[in-house]
Length: 280
Image 1 (cartoon, one colour):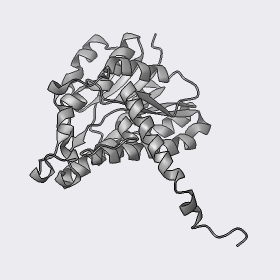
Image 2 (cartoon, rainbow, N blue to C red):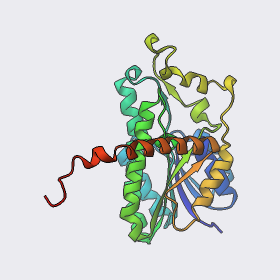
Image 3 (cartoon, rainbow, N blue to C red):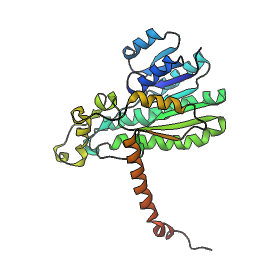
Image 4 (tube, helix red, strand yellow):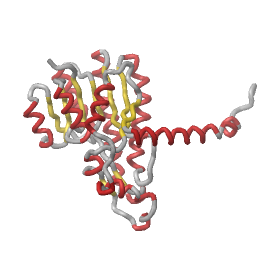
């Protein structure tokens, strides 16, 4: 008997694929979305009773609603919704084309927002559930040459933190997952790189090129272990607002936040100087 039912976007590779495999192995039901059916044909064959594949491009907002509505109608209840689909885009801000900017925002930010909004009426109607948004430690930390990716991740984290407070009274929990570097196609296959402008050579904006080259060392994160921790988080009550995966990611996040807090604390007098004096 199935234990829980999950809806996961982007199960063709990376975290999505690892999540689907582990959940199906333990007999949970999974609705997994892909842009092309071929990458999950093996899962369809191995798990005909517990895996349901849906072809979806998350830039298609009406399509998201159709898939979500159809999945809830077919399965009766979906316990966990994982907004995972997304990709990385590297290059200095002025190297990016308008089309590249629009597409990553439509995919990573607007697509995630549309998925969450589409699921909320169903989760309320069934009396609760869990939404897991796969972000990145790049939702807290920013590096040169990655500005639009950071824009989408910082944006979706703010959205989720607000919505988590809105839907808590209905028994809906939201968790933001912030993985560090992992050995997935995100870094070593699907990452997109803008056309290079020589003026940025030998500057921090092009430092990402070394990271994307596996000859310089692989990322430390194990996607299978990360997927296992994500699955475990779904059973934690109340839902943790954020979980960071990867020791390097946590160290970098803590260092960044400490610096940011120190900068804010140094502005106490400046901030107070713009208030009306007491009694006025």
